[in-house]
Image (cartoon, rainbow, N blue to C red; front, side, top):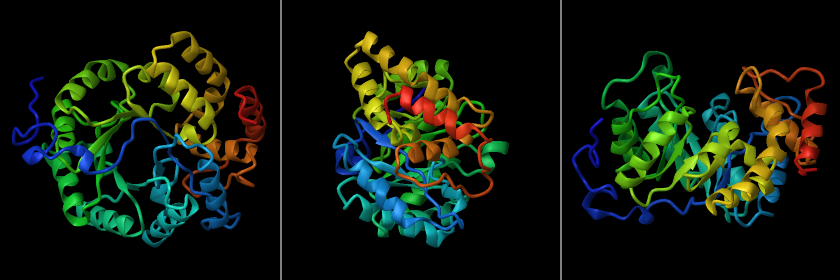
Length: 327
């Protein structure tokens, strides 16, 4: 496929030669995607958010925290709750770690309002989710590019490109990715294509056409493959085993194969009980169980459409956390 450096042939570092370092922040490294803790009654648990934030502050290498993503049940919250959540996480980390807000609203207009509200609440960036109708029906040519532009125009919130899995109709073709990532207000790529042939083929091209823009993997269950060519992690896994995530990333970036597989193999029992489940969405619930094992959450309450894990799941997760050296 022939590709250019952007919709209008602009340089890949942005229109008018704008350097992407002027927008956003350094994401080369490790960033966890945080859960949204709830009380037993189903309301946001702000005391638990404070505990999670203080836990993250123990790790000076954390580059940012994503909230309102899949792991954070972002689509299950009201607009008011989303604002409250961003503010709560900003407060919990004392403003010392950038907060990224998942922007999940269906239409561009409401997504722009969501991004504007997130910025006003203290978010440093927005991770743009595809319009969910695209998952089933696909997207019109040019519609993803306009979605990012409209959200930026409405909010001036620095944005991160989110690549969805290959098996969905919302996955972006290579040219569309480059068009979006070439814009100066889009400063990083979170890639979750979950197709290793596309990863191996497209990542080198994206890196060449969009230099200086970090490529982050969110393949929690495929980290060992995608770690060799990425600039960092943006993963839910990071909140229950942040020590191991940093170890694995450091080993892969330094091309220490033996060390990388040592960490990977130590994590595999935990990877299985968190992510190798009937639905990938069950990973959100499993992450909460992991935080219970670490003493950060008191219970793994979720909102529908999620359901509690089967009886015995917590014991399996707790045992795997011990094998991983996390508790």
